[in-house]
Image 1 (cartoon, rainbow, N blue to C red):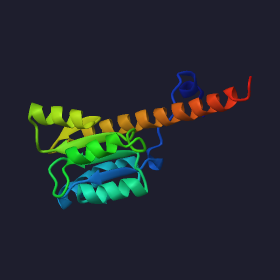
Image 2 (cartoon, rainbow, N blue to C red; image 1 turned 30 degrees about the horizontal axis):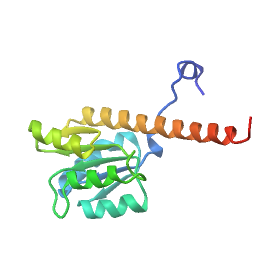
Image 3 (cartoon, rainbow, N blue to C red; image 1 turned 180 degrees about the vertical axis):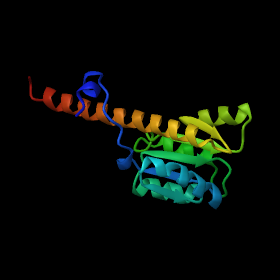
Image 4 (cartoon, rainbow, N blue to C red; image 1 turned 60 degrees about the vertical axis):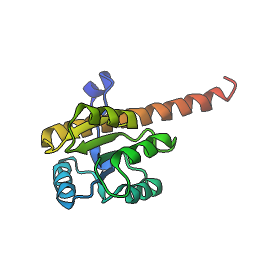
Length: 159
């Protein structure tokens, strides 16, 4: 490990091990987002609506979700609420990606539990920066959970 990174308390973010789920009913949007995310080198799964995404999340939770709002069968708002209401998936970062850009839409996304919000057309650099940032937060949260589990395990020894 790099001693400078170690000394500052940082560890490298390996995005190749992170899984990202794209949810959008528009095939061109999915292809564009996937192309932008190619730079991260992480596996990307795509779903065309909220119902399909819910099944994918339940079977194999991703590390981050990029979620369109306006979709058939289940809106992005509804899906985000379901994700955040379930303790098994509540910690998965959700970035809402939409053509809606009114203040009320942002407020509704935040109320649904979204961690971030991007408007279409999506800027590649902005998308990658926000995805990296939220993946880093998720990685740190996982490390904290593991450390807390270890503390609890060691504390249970009566020491």
